[in-house]
Length: 147
Image 1 (cartoon, rainbow, N blue to C red):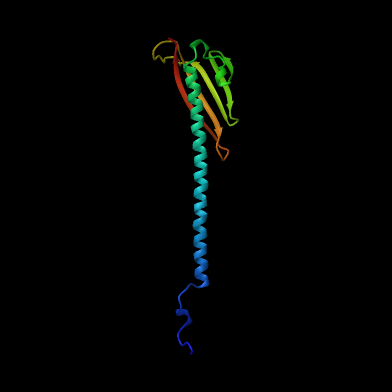
Image 2 (image 1 turned 135 degrees about the vertical axis):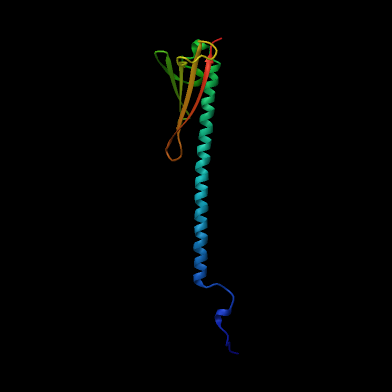
């Protein structure tokens, strides 16, 4: 028996069609890999930002629970080192080797009267670096009043 029909009529793919399909799949897999890398970076940044917010909130809450006359002193619970310049105290601590927390206690600016003249501004800035090494900061501020 001899075949008189075309061989091309048989089902299947040519080598070129298979190579194009493989290149297309490789491109898609590469793009998915990039999505995972970006998602991982964003998750890491989100985790660090959340931790920085927690540290800033902790410092503000401990300041609110500190006697008004002691606001500008070192807070042992926050493991701080403070320096006082005039009426402004700046207290610094390092947490987990990755976060730097700076708590600044100062009188409210002139002309700002909320309840009484016995008020201080507590400003907390937590700094850290993201996965790419870019500096990031989180800031929380509050007013503490003497009663």
